[in-house]
Image (cartoon, rainbow, N blue to C red; front, side, top):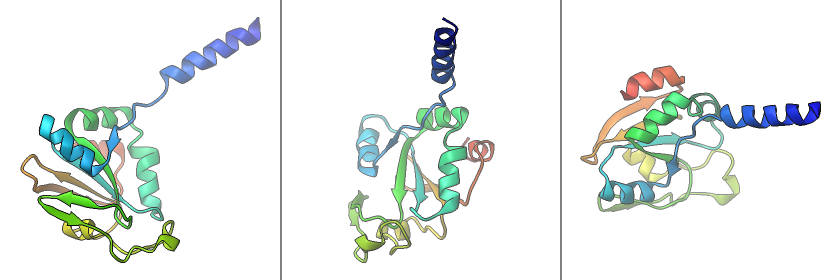
Length: 152
């Protein structure tokens, strides 16, 4: 009986302590969502090999207050700046023509869209406003409190 009580307690505690998650979507999904309800787009520009990018995921984006704020005020996109997806924005299609699949989990060539966003280092967080122009370019790691202040 005592084991059952502990089990119920841990299940309930686990459910109640789960952090709010950011509703990440693809860039194409964000553009489509903007057609229905106009909100800025928040882009987390990362790479697979970047340690501070991983810290953002683990420490910053897992913060409940920040996740709620981003979900309410932005369409959130994760964009691999060295990936191979095709992105269409403002009538232009961006690709990564020098992408090397054998280097997918290490340094690779930079995506054309990352150049368009003027990404200089990783991580970078970009806010594209309702007018399709870059409103904010946040370079480097931020904790949840710092990022929340910059986004508000």
